[in-house]
Image 1 (cartoon, rainbow, N blue to C red):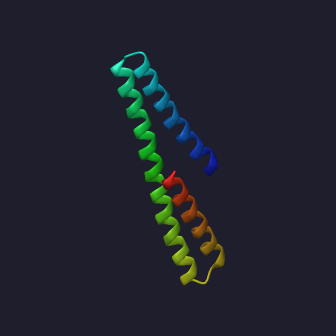
Image 2: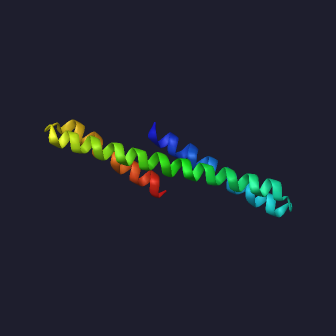
Length: 89
């Protein structure tokens, strides 16, 4: 499920970049700026969600280690790593 979300955000970012390039080719500043805005919004959303996942994962990992709960520690580490990958793109 996490992979699907990452791909949909990438698709939105790609769609915005295509729209921006098409606007440049057609000499349409409106289409170009709409595409740039769409790509930027998708990129910001992906990075923000990645940062949140990374922070939540770090907290879960810490709580799992503090409570000696290896399952919670592993879930936290997995979420932190996924958030880091998502944020960095």
